[in-house]
Length: 325
Image 1 (cartoon, one colour):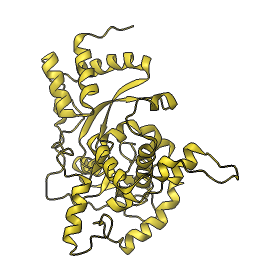
Image 2 (cartoon, one colour):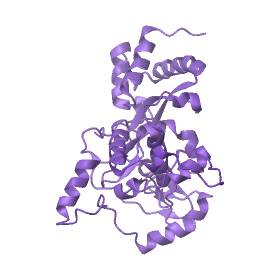
Image 3 (cartoon, rainbow, N blue to C red):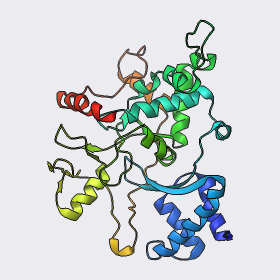
Image 4 (cartoon, helix red, strand yellow):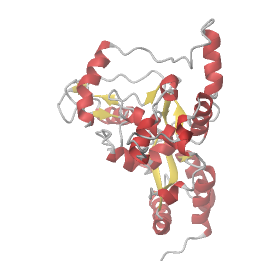
């Protein structure tokens, strides 16, 4: 059995204490500990991670990397590989809060348009009964489904507070358009769940395509993450759908998106600017500003900024929904 040195312990402790770290932050810690840059000493960096994971495997933990599906930013984190009743005892969230979180993630994952988010009002109004059916299955004496009181009495105010806490803990995130998206911690932890739920994967990186571009051919189910699409186009100049041979006509945004690292550095990861989710206003303050801006519409619960779906997207939903099964 390999014995971890203080350097391995320091790397591991930084992830456990601070949660998922950006690639830039994690590389900086590695450089401070070893005096070597992972970009120019990739083999040594990988060796450290491999040695740590060998030890973590004895307690069903794993150190892994993932990309934020909204920015393309790379994160590192430690995840639990076991999902059982005992592991649930380690969470600070209550039963209705966990059911609320799962319902939001399912709603985002089942979106055939691959927008990767839902509006605030849709998040607050997700039905928790489906989580009872899937996980509790408790029935009353007459055979009808018995909804636990904690879930029945889960108020709007409690949902708002839970959303803010889930965003703070990086399980969820606020997207650039003000909607609710899947946080980097969920992308790290729920990889197996996305696979088992048959969430369509990105054709390039094979990770779940929650936030992705769809093939221009409406009869094709291929989807590719924006950052994967940009990298592929930068390498080839154009891209043809690997399934139907339709050419993708993609125009990159004017603003700089992802700063792809030079391949000469030996690192295959990218380092776009860090997205400060912590500094974003809470859901409650967002909703307050929305009410004030609606001139007397204060009775409306959490005004949504979500626009109506254009006809072309409606056709996309119709033809894509069949591929989710």
